[in-house]
Length: 284
Image 1: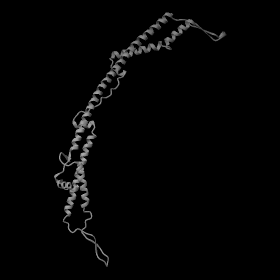
Image 2 (image 1 turned 90 degrees about the vertical axis):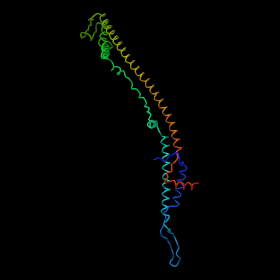
Image 3 (image 1 turned 135 degrees about the vertical axis):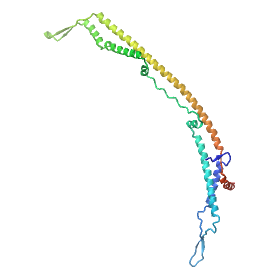
């Protein structure tokens, strides 16, 4: 149903005429119509008329028709005004998604924030050879470290060797019950030291290689995350530009359409033309 057109009457005029129609309805309504005359009198007095019934039904039908026409006119213009207001309200409350759907434009979707790449992700991409080398270096470094670090068994044995070289005997107890513990070096000192130094060298070499691989993994992770962030920022910037462009277009569209709707007038159906002319003369 379209209540509006380029020709017709303004909403202000329509509202004014509807108010006139409302008042006319009140003045011609058949609320208290009677078909009998009502009198009152005292037994000894004169009869007086209290309420007078209609003397003819000739105008009843035409009056009802007029009231119906007036009600129809009011209903029509009220619905037309409400329809026009709803069009303006829909335009003023339009959001970007509705605008894109209405105009067939693609609604911009914000880029998804990238999930951070982890070192485990990089390790998962290693070849079988690379992964074995990594795990092997971890195992070698861990194993060598276990023995040569302080409190490791070989480190402790070396410390004991150095100590017993200086202190080869222990006296435990007193008198005839005293016990003497004697410690003799089982291998040459240079062998102990060379072995320990060799183990340390092997440990440092494996640790160096392992750290190099870890650094490479970390660099790849950081590089990948940086690239993802840069790509995200580029996409985000493009999204914001496109969104702002569409918002600007939408605002122009809403302004133009609102002006068009505001300029539309309320159509008067030919069935209401006579009652409109009647009300228009009353409103002059």
